[in-house]
Image (cartoon, rainbow, N blue to C red; front, side, top):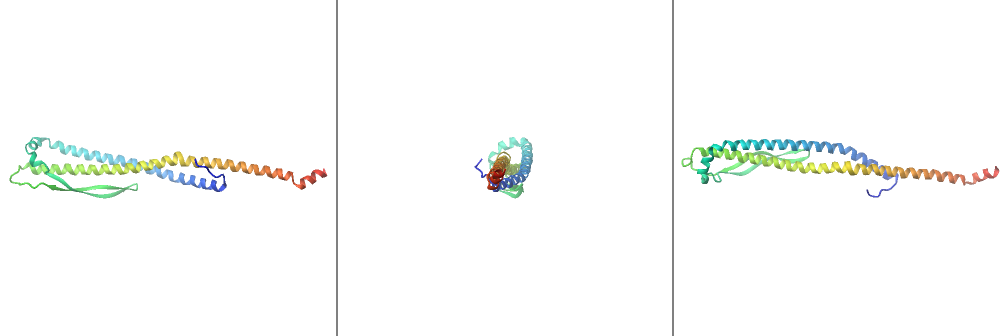
Length: 205
């Protein structure tokens, strides 16, 4: 703890600081809990999107043989051109939200390709969309986690450093001021005992 001045002015400053820290700490603790809850919610959504992607991929199992015979046709069949996102706010943190994807589909001759290619395009688009949606959730979690780390550090700073320091400073200053007051009273009594009036009374006695 830095050296403090043992004065009434410093006592007031430390007291005000303690009140300020004690007022802000519950808000920080509440924010920490909210961020933890949001991260859990985001993780659940990301897991749900991952499960949907796995379901789409499982449905493609029956086409695996067809894909193997037409690798050249399917290569680069669907590509993501743009991921459209919005913005939202979680406990003061700006996060992206998933809206949709824009895709480019490889130009194919509908008369020279098998009919199942249309289904393959839809399945590939669905998978890409789900992958992009999950990526947005991962970014949300990253940003909220950073804010949680910052908030947790501030909570720890207030709980373990600032508030204890202020309490200790207040204790030390009060002791010093009390000792000073006691010393002043003692000096006053001594001075009074040495005053001319006291001497005269002693002589008269």
